[in-house]
Image 1 (cartoon, rainbow, N blue to C red):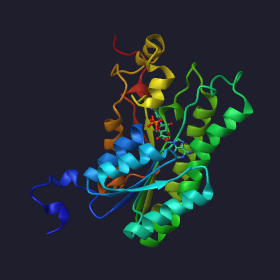
Image 2: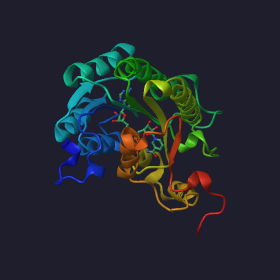
Image 3: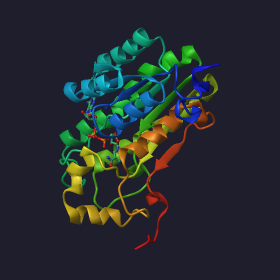
Image 4: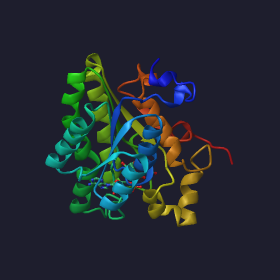
Length: 266
Ligand code: NAD
């Protein structure tokens, strides 16, 4: 009998027993919800964040390991995956999720080069660094699932532009597809998670506290609401697990129907 055969635990909810999962941006929002969900499915979770307090708190809650990491720093990223390997003996899941959406990133007409570059570094270069660091472990194991957080903004245009954020997520999507194809025969799956708007601190800061700005977006979502972080975390757990064994190089949209919509319900 394996761990997943335990009659006390429904097998579908314990899909990650024996697996090690690294989550970046684990201190808040989608990352925090995913760290909790992956741990609840049996994974040993390594929570990484640049914010020590929130990252450590999440790791403590789920009995995981906290590694203080700035995902734009190549040395720190390498040390993060090395810590996962050294502590738990494998790196099976990498949820490369840390990202930002600062107010200085807006229309191309007003966004300066500094804001552009910073967002590219945190949202896109970081994913390059994390994938580059984790792939050798997964190649050696002949197994692994990489999930990179892109966005519905990678597949839909918005008149309310955040130009560097959108471009960065387009880059994450294209890079992920390519990695999924390149490593498919080595047992490593690589997928781009594309959330629609999610009710997290990042989104709240952007517009949820302004009802008019929120309403402007909500009418384009067939479901008429923002996602809960837990709904995105459920997709992460699926992509991390063997249930997604034939899913790779995908743009995995979890967007309440936004990307499929023309006229939405009133
Ligand atoms: P959030 O602000 O709630 O959490 C982001 C976390 O990343 C924070 O804990 C922050 O400290 C951490 N972080 C920021 N810079 C970092 C760095 N350099 N190194 C390490 N950690 C860093 O945001 P969220 O809404 O949970 O967003 C998570 C991801 O989802 C981001 O990539 C974001 O672009 C993407 N996303 C969010 C939405 C949304 O509506 N919230 C929609 C689509 C995509």
